[in-house]
Amino acid sequence: MLKAQIRSVIIYLITAALLVLVIQRVGPDELLATLMGGKPGFVLLSLISAQVIIFLNVFKWQILLRSRGYDISVFHLWKLCLVGVFFNNFLPTNVGGDVVRGYELGKQIQNSPLALASVFVERFTGFVVLVGLNAVSFVALTQYRVTENPMLAATLLFAVVGLAIAAWLVLDRRLLSIVVRRARWRLAVKYLTKFEKFQQAIHEFRQDRSVLLRAILLSCVYYVGIYGYVYYSMLAFHEDVWFLGVALVVPITNLVAFVPLTFNGIGLTELAYVLLFPMIGVPAPAALSAIVLIRANTAISSLIGGLLYSRMRADSAATAVSPVSLS
Image (tube, rainbow, N blue to C red; front, side, top):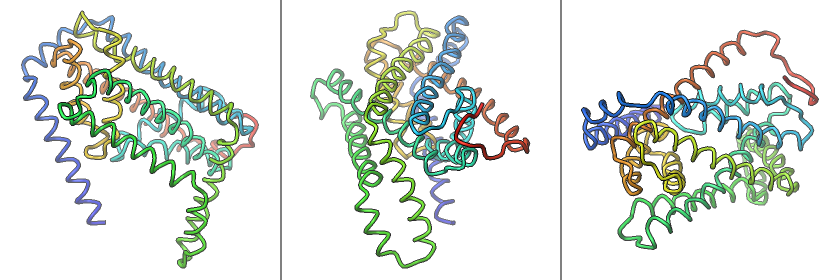
């Protein structure tokens, strides 16, 4: 418990230090002036785009669930996604909200392994696409000059290694079988058995290649939506923004957010924006203002998710349902 508290304190300190570093690098006065000069029309487009990209993930999640016989409405899954956003802003990882939304759906459909597996597959297919996009971005932005761009090289290496480890631990059923057979503690066996059911549910998704292909294609559409979201956020503070340039930088900034050094990538992402977007002609104050706007949009979604979660907890009618329909 004490170690966890110490780790949390260290994470918060690193987050705060990076934010101070970024603000000092840009200049508080320049940042404030840029923020005050934001164009309301593009700010509104940014806000709308933030919800559009959530719905893109919702559609993918719905397709995965339907492939297993669960017809869940888009609106209900959207609410669960916003609940996930809410918890992402209160838990020290950017995957904590995924666990919560999977857990809540699992209770409602009375199939926790399947619900959590659907969330994992939804996220994993997106991460596979993200790693691929990062490879393209790395080549385009560095032209193989690895030693001149250690931050980009380290980020891509982290992604590839992380993806490989996650795939091996979750998808290789032989490894878990060996661990379960050799486990001695009753509590360990209990949770390993639950994980085995989760792994089995993932295996069922793996067998349906057409659904996985659709999930990957929707992930590609999702990242096009992300490009538009960031593009509008940039246009709110800078007139001359190159869309294809945004498409090259965004995968790297999104991947940086997964590095577990700060609270939900805060500080690291801001630093990446300030360092990378000037490479495509966006001034650092405008880049930092854009991520501030994106953080504000996330805070709004988080607030809505918190209200929805409170309603879900207070609603005694939110009981388990059969795998037919949920609205």
